[in-house]
Image 1 (cartoon, one colour):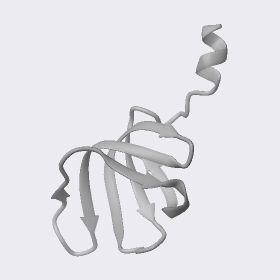
Image 2 (spheres, helix red, strand yellow):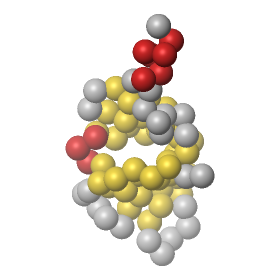
Image 3 (cartoon, rainbow, N blue to C red):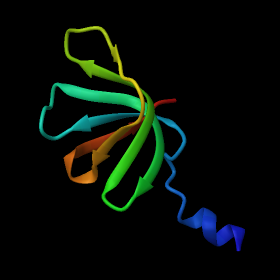
Length: 76
């Protein structure tokens, strides 16, 4: 049973990631992918990354619709 549950576990879940957004290519969000449910991705411990500016810390959880994600990078 446990093996079946791990099969559906997204490989980037509970790992540090950088999410590039479709609506603003110069904006990205760095955080830990906390949950992936339906059309929504939930991140914790986030920072807003903008070109030419220092990272801005974001409070609470950040929820992003999957349709707005250009691509997701896993940070080593």
